[in-house]
Length: 243
Image (cartoon, rainbow, N blue to C red; front, top):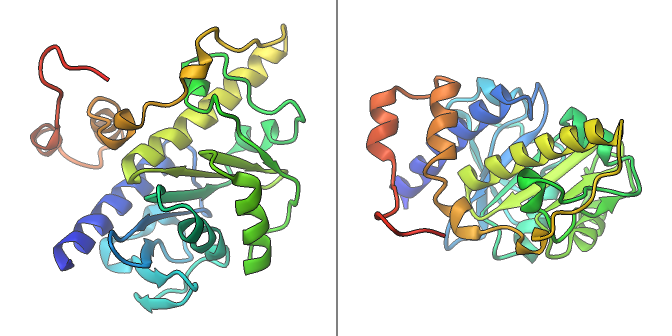
């Protein structure tokens, strides 16, 4: 278990660096990862995530109590505890204040699955209409009820919350959501976006569980690891295999 936790901490720090480099996180926002087989998770402390090292990562139980790490933990840790308690399928949670997600979340029309980035959210991205920071268990439970079984939710005027099966896939989902929001707002300036004909395909979870193309590229792009280390960790599909 110690090795598992240390591995998760390292990957969490890498994820924080990637989403910061992509403009998803700034000085605020938080990324977490469930510790398998337990009612605990890891989360970055309450300072800019890009500055965190593995030793800074805190362990929190599902009641929101910090049980390891110096802290302080984010005031909106309730977002993570509420989701992990209600969604056993979720292995990672991200809350951010990405610019275009905030803007699109102000529109009643919401996200339209009109391109590849948006298609993984074809089941919809609901809008939570409370713009306050989710810093209480009550507000967090309301947000989780609005989230339902969806993969992400807009917090009107505040940001968004994105979930995924693991750290890497979750970060990729958040990046794709922000790009989809930006593209939709651009498209709306001169026409009306329409859903893709095959948008109902939705997300392919296996691609997020092993993002063997997207994630290595992001690690390289943001100089998180050397090319040698990145290539050594790639788990490609067998020739002819696809999902």
